[in-house]
Every structure is written in structure tokens, then in C-alpha cells.
Amino acid sequence: MRSWERRLKELEEKRAQRAVSEADTSNPSRRAEIRDFISGMMRLMGRIRRAPIDPPEIAYRTQDLYELEPWPLAMYVCALSLMEHPDEYAARVLLQEVCGDDTFLFSLVEGLLERLRERREEEVSA
View 1 (cartoon, helix red, strand yellow):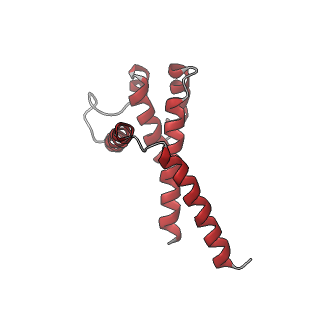
View 2: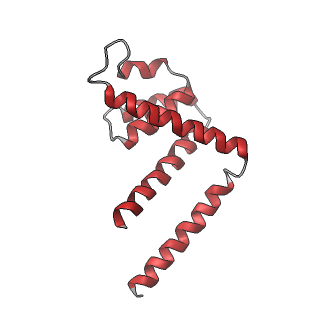
């Protein structure tokens, strides 16, 4: 198979996968929820990056993760994962403990990370 045919097939497969995942976000309130999640995650990435220069009382600390509710903890998991931070594993384990059998946040985190990584790879390859 020629390279352009292979590339076209890959793009078609990605588009089909994206169409399935976009069906999950067709609800306007669901889209707003995801937008809020991403916004919070971006804010937390800034907080984590500023930790070395922030005053100790507001700087990011690993122990802060243990005081969080599931939603902000999931935001931290995404932020730490995207930043390839050493605290990512601890945050994931904690999220699993806090959520128990509820898989909604895990699927949100993994779906979002997958999309963001795909876009990063597309930008690099373009």
C-alpha cells in the first residue's frame, strides 16, 4: 500500500473514532461540563508549574491531593499526566481509591488524555 493510501486510511479511522467520541458530547450540558474540566485542568497545570516560586501556603504539594474531592482530583491526574510529573501515579491510585467502582471519571480522564495526545502527535507530524 502506498504511503498516501495508508495515511488516508489512518485519517479515516481517526475520524470514525472521533465521531463516536463526539456523540458522547452532543449534549450541551455535557460539553459545558467537559469545558469546565479542561479549564480547571489548565489552571492546575499552572499551579503545578509555579510550585517552586509560589509561597509555601499556596504552592502545589503532593499532600494536597489527599484532601480533594473526586472531580478536582481527576483534573490533577490529567494535569500531572500531561506534564509527565512524578506525582501522577500517586494521584491515579488515590483517584481509584476515592472513586471505587465509579468509572465515569476514569473514562473522562483517559478519553481526554488520549485526545490531547493525538492532537499533540498530529501537530508534531504536520
